[in-house]
Image 1 (tube, rainbow, N blue to C red):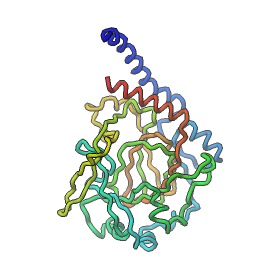
Image 2 (image 1 turned 180 degrees about the horizontal axis):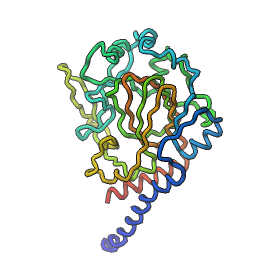
Image 3 (image 1 turned 30 degrees about the vertical axis):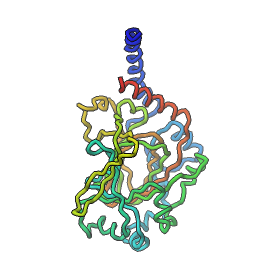
Image 4 (image 1 turned 45 degrees about the vertical axis):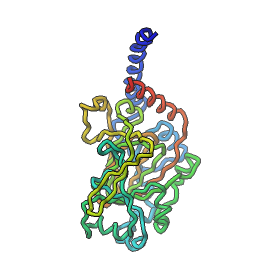
Length: 323
């Protein structure tokens, strides 16, 4: 019986590999481009849904939120005046990588609660620290921690809410140092990422690149700062392992992950006043200019055919990897 199973397994695996190899090419034939397109004006909610959300394609929209007071008001001086006395959550790491693989662990940042004015002192380099600080808490921190700033933006993006028939799950505020980096990952959200000042640099992969992007399971851990200022990595031994991407797309180890050479990342820079539509399940790695300020809106994705497509692709990739 074992021998018969082995004889049948090789052709099946070859078929799966051929299927996986064809997925990305077919996806690009269906409309994915070599660069992220720009829209110079807003479409109607129906048009945007039909032309961008349904085909799961990213775009950068100019003039999408030019009416926001934040574009003119949100200087560091203004933020200090309006919210400087608040206690806020700040992610602190030794290297700028929060929620990333380090020393064979999935390591999360130390979360410090500090006066926002003290955080701004670090961003403005009035205080020098060897650590990297980033306001990046993603639990709708704009509405929860910075309600004073809500009047300068919008609690939702009206045309997107109409297109999707729902309100955003979260509205997040981002401000940090240039050393702060977001490691490669994906989200189950339709993401509208609005840069208020500075620039964000995105490296993107479509879901169809999943066969070339490695995942491994890691014990979760957290950075903790010792009394002498050094960082320790403290394991969360009782927690389940976390699937995460160990690869750095800026400097990929192709000897360890040769499949990644077949991936075709898209790169784009989102400037002040521009909005990136980042579709659900797209992999993204993010860098930023120093002191960049941004707001993003997370709308829960529809668990429809594209989700089923990704789950199939993910399952086939895992099956080939395990053999």
